[in-house]
Image 1 (cartoon, rainbow, N blue to C red):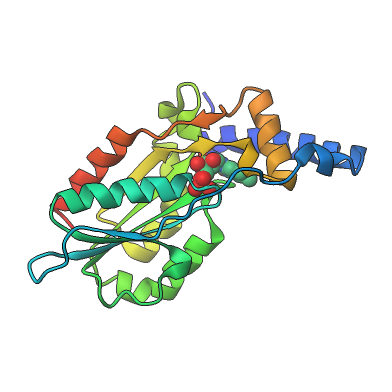
Image 2 (image 1 turned 180 degrees about the vertical axis):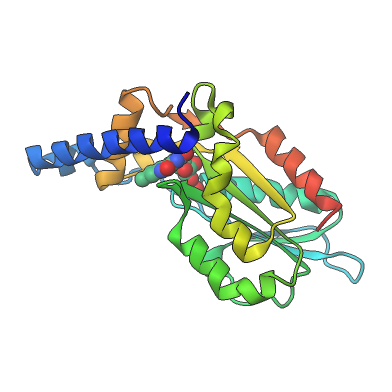
Amino acid sequence: MPNQKELTRRRFLLLAGSAAGTALVSTACDAIAGHAGSEVRFINTSYGEENSMSKKVLVTYASRTGSTAGVADAIGKALAKKGASIDVKPMGEVNDLGQYHAVVAGSAIRGQKWLPEATEFLSVHQAEISHKPFASFMVCITLAMKNGDQYREGLKSWMASVRSAGKPLGEGYFAGALDLDKLSGMDKIKMGTAASLGIFPKGDFRDWNAIEAWADSLSGIL
Ligand SMILES: Cc1cc2nc3c(=O)[nH]c(=O)nc-3n(C[C@H](O)[C@H](O)[C@H](O)COP(=O)(O)O)c2cc1C
């Protein structure tokens, strides 16, 4: 049986080929691809009481179509229920980690990697993150595939760079969402092709119980 890396690389090569072929056919591609139609919600909020007894935790995320924002929000709510004071913020809106006792950082996966802005966030804040309790997570569509769980172990390599930068105390791997209305251009063509070939499923596959359980598992260690 092919391992995760081989499987997805082969599938992505196939997709890239189909997408490039489509692009050559005509500039009508843009009409097919359309533009991102539905609204993407990036969450910036706080949960829990801030007081001298509570630990302040940052849950920060990189997301393009909003599903990772929702996962970060659920993690923030669950940690707040356990008594922490939480800020949930997009990575682009975080300047200073000084006020936080601990950091939970997560990214959507594209091309089997954290988004570039998430990797950049880690490198900018690496010195501080390496001295704080830290946990990381990823949101991808592979885990939503039929029998996607069999790839869970292989997905760990997609967070290898995060592991070397931040030494996470916990790692979360979550199924995300594929909403073609939120994509445009080649991204829409590529993922639309994958969906129509039955490789990736369309829809929202976030498992709120699994996300909450993971957040609960962090509350004792962050
Ligand atoms: C261009 C593109 C590339 C993607 N690449 C991968 C991938 O390599 N592996 C995977 O499992 N999911 C991949 N996905 C699926 C996303 O990780 C998934 O849709 C995720 O929920 C998106 O998170 P967001 O809504 O926070 O942007 C890709 C999605 C897009 C649009």
